[in-house]
Image 1 (cartoon, helix red, strand yellow):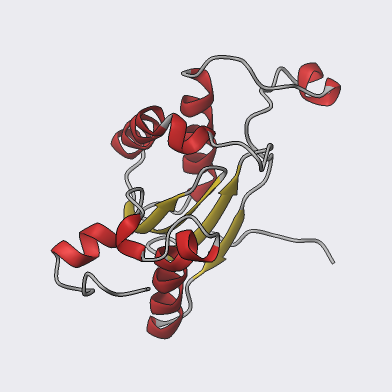
Image 2 (spheres, rainbow, N blue to C red):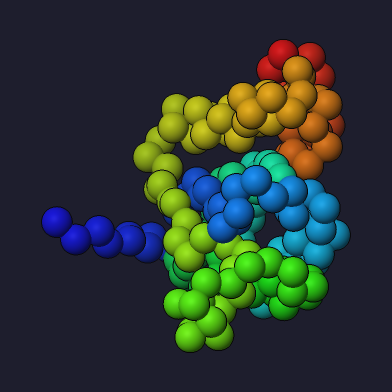
Length: 164
């Protein structure tokens, strides 16, 4: 069976995007560059970030596409590109990536899931905000600074002591 992505205008998707080197801390070390990459892409190709967490070697995000566009692949590709373009070339690069003039920062693919209903939406928000605890970076969600958890607390959607 061949895998196929389904693009739905206005749909909400959960994404996981990984660095090629899963022992790296590049995403938090270069957080300003990553934020800038997101800003550039959102200006050119709008989308709404419902929830997000940035970990050292990967990120999870829940995004809603605009009603007139569903091309999430373009957005992820450009985020990766702008980030990669603006950091120093220190990673090792495989011969296959060299042949294609690629950097060795990101895994080539990403994982996506189209949100089915409110229960699925809520479960993925919880997964995103619990992820730093799951990976042992912190004991409470409030202690991980690279997370939309703090926006959820400010907006009164979650209590500060949630998740830990």
